[in-house]
Every structure is written in C-alpha cells, then in structure tokens.
Length: 458
Image (tube, rainbow, N blue to C red):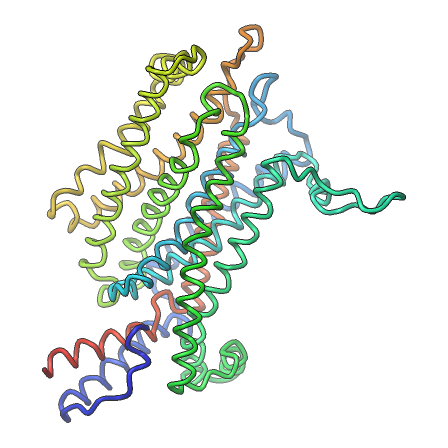
C-alpha cells in the first residue's frame, strides 16, 4: 500500500517480465479461492467449524425454549459463561484492527500477509461478542430496551450513568470504524477481482469496488483515508477496551474495584488478538496454500510481538498482586489469596502458565520457526485469556463481602456448548470470507513485489 502511489519506474526487460509473472501469480493464488473452488484443507476446516456451530445452535435453542435455569447461575454468581465469553470476544476483536492499523502507521511492509486476516477477525469477533448479551437476557426481545422507548411524557432513555450503556456506544463506534477500515482496504482487490471474474461475480465485484479506477489520484486519496482511519482506530482501541473494563472497575466488588483494569484489559486484548491472528495464519497458510504470501518471517515477527505483550501482561499480574498485598484493603488481599489457594486455584495457575510462562518459549528462534509449536502456544494463550476473564468475573462474584452469600459456581453442558458454538460461528464466518474474498491483500502484495524488484535493480 505504501508504494502504490509511486509512478511506474522504468525497469529492465527481464525485471518487467518478472514483475508481470509475479503479479499474474499473485492474482491466481489470492483471487483463485474467490473465483474457483476451495482446496481440500479448506473443506476439512469448514466441516469442523460447522459441527461446532451446530452444537452451539442446539444449545442456544434449547436454552431459549426452556429458560435460563439451564445455566449454573446462582444467587451469588449472576454473570458467568456468557459475560466471560462476551469480554473474551471483545478483547479478541479489538486487537485485530489495532494490529493492522499500527503496522500501517509504522509502514511495516510485512503487514500485507497479516492485515486482512486481522481486520476480518475484528468484524467477526465483535459480532460473536454481541450475541452473548442477547442470550444472557433470557428474553432476547428485551434488547429493544437499549433504544429510546416511546412514552406519554416523551422518549424513555437508557441510563447513561451505567457502564453497560457506555459499552454499547463505545463498541458500536469501534465496529463502524473497523468496518470502514476493512472495506476500504478491499476496494483495490474488488476492482482486480472484477476484471478477472466472469458472469454475475464480475458485476458484484464491480459494484463493490465503487468505481475504482486505479489512478494516482485515487491511490493518493486512498492512502490518506487509510492513514486517517488507522490513527482513529488505534485511539479507539485504547478507549473502547478501557470502557469495557469500567463494567468491573466502577463497581465495589472485591477484585474488580481497581484502577489497573483499563491498561490491564487493553494489554490483554492485544495479547489475545495477537494469539488469535497467529493461530488463524498458521492454519490458513497450510489449508489455502499461501506459503508464498504468509511467510515464516511474518510469523516470526508476530511471535515477537506476542512475546512482548506477554511480558506486559505478566507485569500487570505482578502489579495487581503487589497492590493487593501492600494495600490496606482486606477484601482485596483475601480475593488474591482465594485465587491462589481457593477452589479456582488450578484455573489461576493455568492462566499464569498459559499467558506468561509458555510464551517465553518464543525467545528461541527454533520455536518461532516451528509452525505446529507456534500454533499450540497461540491456542494456550487463547485458553489462558479466557481463564483470566473467567477468574475476574466468577472468582470475584463467588466470594463477595457477605459470607452468607457465598455459593460456588459450576457450568452446565449448555454453557459449555454455547462457548463451543461461538468458536464455530467465528470459524465459519472467517472461512466463508476466505472462500469468497482474498484473505491476503492483492494490492499490497503487488506493491511489495514492486519494491523488492526496485531494490534488486539498484
């Protein structure tokens, strides 16, 4: 993208033919999935995703027909799996656009292989997250109450002093900006696909390209708009996930009422989003034969960023521990000891291992170049981040200020099946995107190849 506005430079005949061959190959490889038939690896992944989605659909349907008594909620724990899943998917989604935007702002050329997957991940993850507050209501039609209701004395507005209302506005704002950033990046590819496609696909891609003509003026305006949206999205990520943390930090529940939650949540979101992108890239690279576009060097760079965010997350855990130990607040100290030695202690130490200890293996270059091992580390990081959300929500609610209200929480099969279904929905949507649209930017891949040719000619 960064080199696309440069005027075409004169190249030797050999370089020009090499460029043309590489551009044709890029169009065939990256646009082939949208224009032809998917590979066998894609079908295998899609079958697993559909099966997981079917499990979730059955569970949610049963819950809506039977009632929320199918959950393991009790008088103490009113938020459990559904809100844990909501915060988890919001964290995963908020990091996707941030990864792409930061790499664009810093002019990192290796972003071509990871940006489109990260941006798509954001859109789908936010949609997955939005489902859980609806399910959590037990009566989905009551979601209309977040809108101003007609009343004899005028519209009945929602409670704007509630952090839950702040969530709605913050997440919707970020979703709109992310959607614009994602769609804007697809415009050059839509134009390329419209020239390569035939029949109804040619008309659809031509309509989606919004009259893209590829002129220097168009490219210049395109780059300026992308940079503007990237800067806006970067600021929104920090603000939006800080607002999500206010759902907990603005309360008085022990373990929630702390000022470290905003940066703590932001770092955790970046870490979980990086792990999700890394896992998707490893699978996508093999299933769709994209080894030439999602390179080992790109995966290596992603691993290094994941290692850095793991260190920041470990620092946040240390600060939280020291604040509870040296602070003059008994309930916070009790909550810390409960997490380390109580009924959820196994979850706590598994979280520490997955989020802090296991990623330290990425210091080794051999580990970073071992794709199955990187995939396993990314999955463990995702599991650790889910456990972190679970401990924050359930661990604090199980032991409130009043011992008479202490009740342990155990999830039911319906809740576990709903979690499995959310991953199925995410993977189905992502794989369908990979099927119909280029998962790696054709325009940025072309620009990167032109840059390499110019450097070689010099």
